[in-house]
Image 1 (cartoon, rainbow, N blue to C red):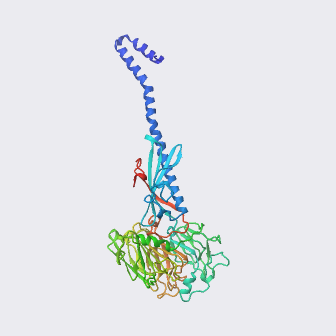
Image 2 (cartoon, rainbow, N blue to C red):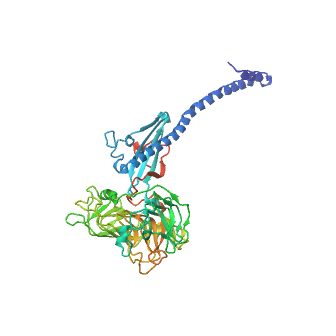
Image 3 (tube, rainbow, N blue to C red):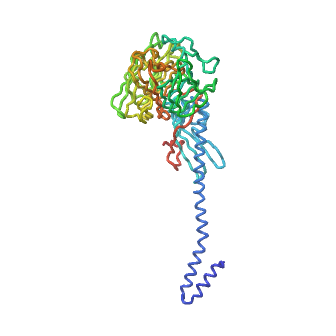
Length: 538
């Protein structure tokens, strides 16, 4: 049936007698055009429906992948060993011990709309986790699969340029260093009467900390130290974050870039957690006396040849034997080229002396144990790392941001190529009477005791200038590096290596109960229907 509009067009064209037979032709064309419009609209609407559905599924697939990421992080938070024990290689079916189907099949998140996730983790040489997560949404031709690759890491002292548990002198260090106080103990500010006044270690004029600073205690200052980033306290006994040390003419005011804040408490683990990875992926060096590991001193030196990206680091030591797992393919024969190790983790039963220059990823861990086969860090004999000279990365790899307004030295902020970790079960010690203005490029962790300068109270010559640390420092007790006023030892010039947010020394130790979180991510082949279940890799 013709519409009223169509009939009017025909009458108009027919009335034009001067057009002759053309009128009928025009009428037919007009009718065809008018009739095709609804058909075209309907066809376009129908064609767009799958695309609209795919657009919705595109967003839903991202949400499903995020749900998979959160699921994996919850497992890690509940069990820090989850990342090392379970992966797509040993979790391949419902019969596997993992109890988590997300490793080998789609896990349903929602039925309306249909959403699923699956994931595949890989532990990196640094001990961090590379996690590929796929999210799937929709069904049939409208289904969308999106895969993302995340770098996942736990909270750590590597978040800070300075980290401490107690801001007072370690009683072990006080007893070891002659002339030190004998009334120090493990006491926080605000806990009972607090630490003895002669055991408090203060920040002083001339000290500059360029990076985040954290303690589980309360900071003390004498003079006008400079804090260029955040200053946080996790002290559960006092809401005072920083106080002025009494007596000794202490005055002045510290300089803050950010208002000091109160945060949650943190506690480090033992170096024993690195024993397994060292035996399996790095080098475990132990002593041999009567079948028991009783090494007292292992001397390690680092040397580097070339410069920048062409540098080659070799690690050498004397004494001891290598006691790696039978499945470890590293020869660990001194000297060893760092780049040939499947993981640059060297675990030493005993003490370590170290200095030199290096590039790459290396973590040196010391701990003392007893018993045949080395049962773990169960010895009362201290295990220390002593820095006998500067420890440096190639300058070409370090990015500087200018010079310090306090002491005029360069202020480095990042080195994405090099990571050196020094982890001592007891103390990391800067050796006595070494050169002025020493530089240490490393992430330092003294688990039971301190990072300190031997003979800080009576160095010769007096006033050694600045202790320049680029990386991070973490210690149980606050270790002194000089006397207030610069009469002896060093002033502090600590700069945070911002690349530690992404690049860790191999298997660096996080705090107990650390919360895991992603630090970076990228999408793998956007729009590709492949997933981690089909070995999708970015």
